[in-house]
Image 1: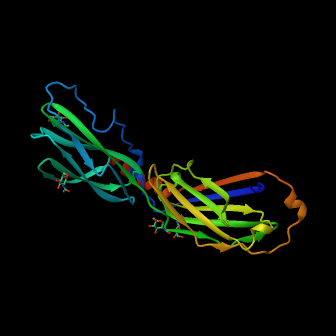
Image 2 (image 1 turned 120 degrees about the vertical axis):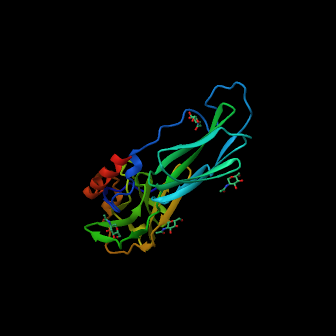
Image 3 (image 1 turned 60 degrees about the vertical axis):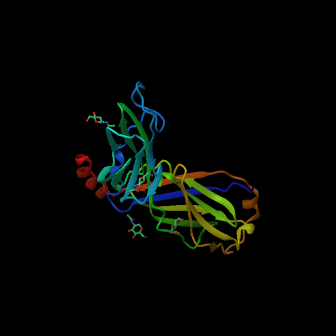
Length: 271
Ligand SMILES: *[C@@H]1O[C@H](CO)[C@@H](O)[C@H](O)[C@H]1NC(C)=O
Ligand SMILES: *[C@@H]1O[C@H](CO)[C@@H](O)[C@H](O)[C@H]1NC(C)=O
Ligand SMILES: *[C@@H]1O[C@H](CO)[C@@H](O)[C@H](O)[C@H]1NC(C)=O
Ligand SMILES: *[C@@H]1O[C@H](CO)[C@@H](O)[C@H](O)[C@H]1NC(C)=O
């Protein structure tokens, strides 16, 4: 590995699409056991199973999903779906119920299907994730300022930001990486990562790429910018290269539209 460079980071986060993700506050309580476990104590039990298909589904925020809850009970007493998400249509067939969930905006939620058969209730769960890969990942041409290059990467319309990692790679080498897990904002956002890079002789003419990774508990979505070549624009002073200094200056600027909060209030009170 090379030397550690002084760095300065400016991260700019701006809310895009106000209103998206308002439903996130309505978190569903965790169920009290593994998928398919019995809720009622077993007595005169008819053995049967309950299944949800799919068990995991990922959609862009705002979409609806269909879940198929099937069971092997010859005569189910009842079948129901428990979720904080808004329910739409229901279709029924022999041994299955097809449930529609509308306008999925919570980044992560669950739906439990409960089936009662001969007095015993069993259930199955689907995990639903709402996400949106970046609309664009754009690396600006590096700007030389003093002895450092200002590298700026714009990531637009991404969700959920708290699960995003932005990495700058120069010729395959990671020069900076930032995880945005501190950001719990529940709407689509634009992110701008600014990094001051003191380029050395080995760095020139190498391709510079900005990579993004959404790490969604089992689902990983990667995107990257078009490569930009770091051009030689100055003669490095040998002393500057010989010394290893770690000077971190992290500045974070967070801008969440007040429009978003304003718009969310009526939605929350309806919930
Ligand atoms: C986010 O970026 C897009 C594309 O550049 C732009 O149209 C939009 O206005 C930006 N939104 C905010 C809140 O900055
Ligand atoms: C639901 O699943 C059952 C069992 O796999 C299947 O027979 C049925 O056709 C499915 N219903 C829909 C609407 O996909
Ligand atoms: C089944 O119906 C009974 C009576 O209407 C109700 O109390 C119970 O919660 C229902 N069970 C499920 C799994 O929906
Ligand atoms: C990001 O990656 C996703 C999934 O591979 C792809 O559908 C999408 O078009 C990509 N977006 C950009 C801006 O490259």
